[in-house]
Image 1 (cartoon, helix red, strand yellow):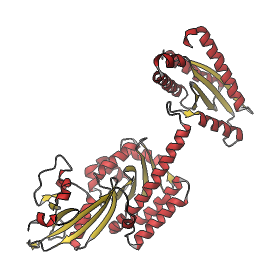
Image 2 (cartoon, rainbow, N blue to C red):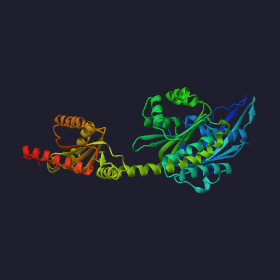
Image 3 (cartoon, rainbow, N blue to C red):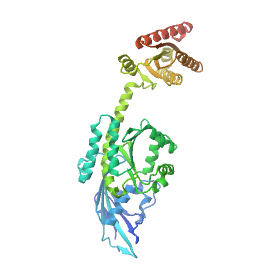
Length: 462
């Protein structure tokens, strides 16, 4: 039969697949029998893809284990199937239709050849109607998760929805691994909340940083939206280091589901030792659940970034004046525990105006950034604030007078090895029933006295 002519009569992105059901009940690899002109792009997705011929192995062009699962089920059970997934930021409708009477023998020497027509539609935005076309048990499960996600104001308590997902999967282990690609930060969250210890342990076992773990998983998915594996064979092939880690923890099957909001990767859903008898039902529930999770995670990341910008100085990446004022207010009100001992240092950059006037504000900004770097080296264990302009304040709770003096000397030593940077410094050390604002004023006055002496000795540096 002329498959091509038949396919051209189908609207949409259409392709035809076949595979054999062998005498022992196992399946052969999937073959691509043809694509219509609307779908020819799949043949050129990879620049290394071979020239097409009817019956070429499908994996020469693509590899998606979930797609293959649907093709095998549709063809072998002669059942039409439908999927609606968020893959790589696109919403994909997939229609899997078993086909017979193609003019070829169905069975020969105990080998039965079956066909499956796949028609694909995709869009950038979600269609509510398509989301609602699910069974009652899927709708109920997703509704319960949605309630869990939105009934708690605290993000990490909301993410305890991992427990609901764990129950859906019949899993022994379940967690959500959030990913902030813009800041390359990740969090490991299970039903007990954020768990940085497990995050670091996982990263150590995979011999990389937590963010690199996420990038490994992204590669392991191989352009699919998820992996639902009844054994770890695929992981062993794609990611041997992760495979070894899983084996050490007694894990023998796994779900790894990508979580995206629109086109942005915001995390992964991870469940292990699942009830494999319910694999397809689990997938349908997770398709919608991960969509809900993606929106909640991205919203949290946006709010976190806004909060960070309100307290972090964008140029120097130390705390800003707003953060300093809030910290002092909390100390005065008693909202924050009043340290028994407090060291305070005011640091002002000398000569910034001259640099701005003679070399431009970009050069001045570089001086400020370098200043912050030196302060982090000397006072990295304490609270560093950019109070404004070229002035920095360091609060050092529970520091001895000797230690404070040593830190200041370390800072001066660093500036001696950095000839384009000079500081004026003033400190105060208080204990007992002290007035934090008055102590800061004293340190400020001493800093200005130090600056006055510097300009007396260097009159051209103003």
